[in-house]
Length: 456
Image (cartoon, rainbow, N blue to C red; front, side, top):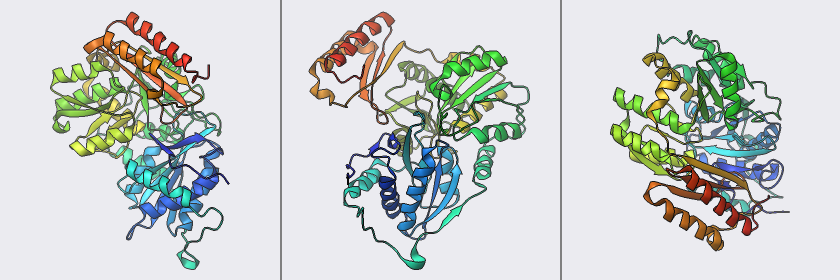
């Protein structure tokens, strides 16, 4: 039998093709059992489990649940919910932690396992590494655990969606009117599909809702935050004031103004940071972004008297830095927005409500609000790879990157890294001259082709 390797966790949990190693039911049972032992302590003997609507999620949910129960820990099954709802309900229900079965923005054949602690935040890397290190020793064929009345019990929480919706509504300022705004929402046929309508309707809006009919295989397919061009088209067709696009598990948010122009996470973080700063609620006058965020964000916020702290890619790193420095606002260019005064993890619907609050209370359309951020030109590549060969073993690639950095000097940067969730290598180039960026992008791509790691 194939044994799992210790390197299971990427930047956002375990991720891969469902029913292929490591996303098999066998591994999922073991992860559930070991995670339950690691998370459950004292009087906290229950774990909440949620999933997105892709067809493999039921299979992996069943396996993870079986593993948790076998460790003598109870399970509260939440059903289909966004990833941030799992963290929210783990905290609300005083659970030992939570598990989300989802591959986020990945296509439907993929899936993943994300772990949350009792505080509703994603568990630290140290906990993941501890779980991964114990997997090779897991007794695959003759596992023994608690017996009799000590075996874990399974409970389905039928009101899970309502509890999460109530938590979202509590952040909405009383008396704020949304009835005059025409709102478009692309739910990515994902975990938030059944929540968007009730949420916005209860706040006085009548949203135009698209891609909100998940059938198990259409999640993220030509829709959601991975396809903002579709949101732009929908906003123009509906003559809407604002548009929102979520991803499959509901923790990312992209927006569109009334002209059909897309706002990414940097735009949204800039708008939120200035609003928090002006209202005097921005903790320590600082925000957290990742190495992917545009340099224009730093320059703009510095002029406003706000510092930007940078972290590696991944909303977990953003959240960890925010907690370490006592901050309450952070985000990623990809659309993760972290509002730690409200929730412990990134939440697309909370982010949408915050943007709507600013638009409603200031009277300024999104097209006007976005003008605060002037971005540097960027070029980004996401290239599929056959293998993740260490960059230090590819001298021609390292030489091309170093030369590009020398040419750009202090006015730009080059970031080349492997994806932590997909078999891809990602290139980000930023600088004042788009022509220079295009030239060096091609040279770095040629160096990668020379190494024969690209699939095409």
